[in-house]
Length: 368
Image 1 (cartoon, helix red, strand yellow):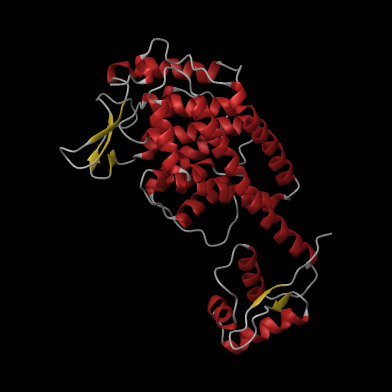
Image 2: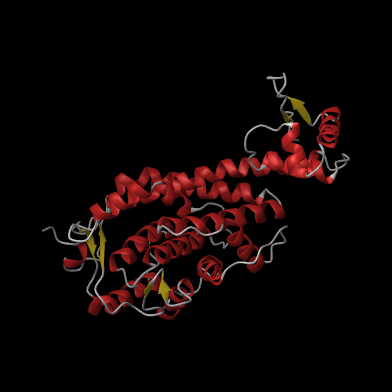
C-alpha cells in the first residue's frame, strides 16, 4: 500500500519544479493585474455588479461541489445585503445560506486578519448552524475527534479514496499549518493559496465542510494577493467545472513524497481559466455600461430598459414580440409598439431570418 504524504517525516516541507510552473504562474500574475485594471476603469456600479456576481457564483459552486444546491437568488440577496449593495428584488434567505455567506465574506472582506483556530471554528459553526450535515449529527465548531475516511461505493464494496491524518494528531498539524499561514511571508500569495488548499485538505480537520473551508482559505489568500476584498472571478466556479480533474490530481498527489508540482500546475491553470471566464463577463458589463452612457439622453421607457438589460446579461433564445410581451407583462400590440420605437431610434434591428417568427437584436454600436 502506497504511503500517504503525511506519513513521511517532515511531510510539509513541500517541493516543486519551478520550471514546470513558471510560464503559467507568469500568465496568472499578468492576468490579475489586467483584470484589476479593467475593473478600476468600470465605474462604481458595474464594479459592484461584477463583485456580487463573482461572490454569488463562488458560494453557490463551492456548495455544489459537495453535492449541495443552494438557491442562487437567496445567496445573491444575502451577499448584497451584507455588502450594502442596492439591488432590485431582494429575497429573504435561509439560516444555512446566511452561514455559508458569512464564512465567505469573512474570508474575503477581512483577508488581512490572521487565520486562527477560533476563526476557523466560527466558520465551521456557521456552515452547520443546526449541528447536522444532512441527517447526520456532526461535531461543529471544533476539530474532529473521530477518524476520517473518504469512501464511495455500496456497503461491502466500499472504495477508500483517502484516509486522513489521525484525529489525535489533528490539533498539532493544524497548529503548524496556522503558524505557517500567518507567519511565512516568503511565498507569493498565489502560490501560498495553492499550497494552503492542498495542505488543509490533507489534514481534513473537521467532521464535514473541509472542502468549502479549504476553498474559503484559498479565496482569502487570493484576496491578499490582490490586496482587495473585491472579487472579480470565481475559483470555486472553475473548480466545479473541472471537478473530475480536481479530485484526480488531489488523489494522485496525496501519495507523493512531498513533490506537489502536479497540484500547483493544475491549480494555476484552473485559476487562469477562472480569470479568462471573468474577462468575457467584464466585456459584457463594459458593453452594457457603454451602451447606457451612449443613450443617457434617449427616451427609453421602463419596459424597454428591462428587456435591453436582459439582452446584455445573456438572453435565453431569440427576442420575439411574444417574449417581450411575456417579460414585460403587456399585450402583443404594446410589445410591438415598444420594439418599433427602439428600431426607429436605431437601438434594435430585425435579425436576418425574417418571416413569421421575426426576432430582434441590439444594433451594433461603437463605444467612444
